Image 1 (cartoon, helix red, strand yellow):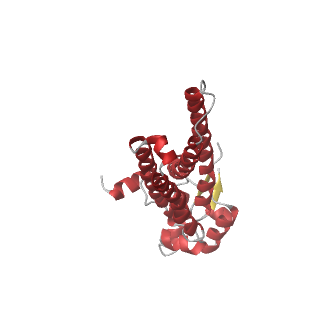
Image 2 (tube, one colour; image 1 turned 120 degrees about the vertical axis):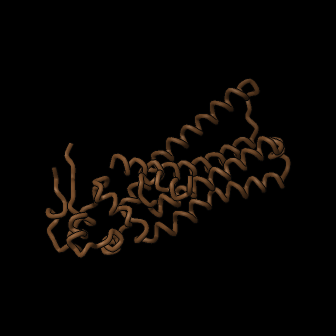
Image 3 (cartoon, chains in turn brown, purple; image 1 turned 90 degrees about the horizontal axis):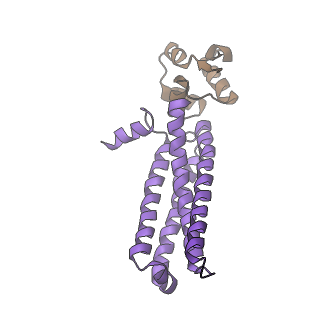
Length: 67
Length: 160
């Protein structure tokens, strides 16, 4: 089965150890959704995916990988 | 077990989402109201008293209206707050409708089969049962919505 993984945890760490709460506030979602994303338990909408990539100033492919 | 432990268990090891927390409160309040209505109907005089005693009927009415208002008070303000209610919560909320539908259909079927079996030979069903049926469907709808939301979070924390 195809799976979408992501690098959010690593990117947060590289971004001066940004907290889940800070990322959630920046993209307009709850901290629980960031937790679910980092654990690969939730696949975000295109809009949320772009917002996350924008916060980290990287491309969508650098955040999300389709396996 | 402390409240926080239960919350963590229901959330799959992480702090509960605002909608999840409110669904749990909604479920507990709904359950309390359902038991109160059931207890009044069973031990307080049954359907005959409900039919003849206006005061008794008002007490039951207050209880089911509370059951109806509870999810509105719990969920509506939260759904207007985008910082506490995001796209994941929306997906779970939409999925909970399936559980709600199943619960409503099952309870309707139970009511109809039970009343038909009991009153088949009489040929008529006391009118008060229609009102009690309506109340029970509302309470079940409220409860099953909360259960559906809790199941949604539980499933997502395990299977994604």
